Length: 69
Image (tube, rainbow, N blue to C red):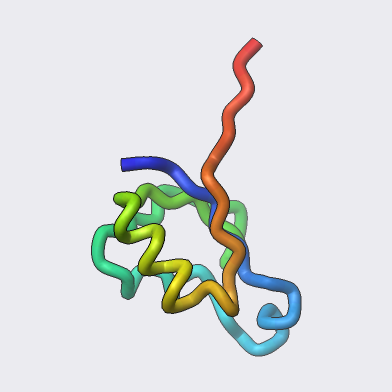
């Protein structure tokens, strides 16, 4: 499974949308987050695609990129 950063789009933050909504997508596991608007998830490529299809209007979903020095 790959890691992704999920964030609630600004226009939905005032509407009470939280990252808890991503838990309803099979194959997605929330691994951590700074608050209820952002989280790190692990997901299969299929689950990430499903997340984008179902909730992409409310969330930004990007692959996590780590920089090591």
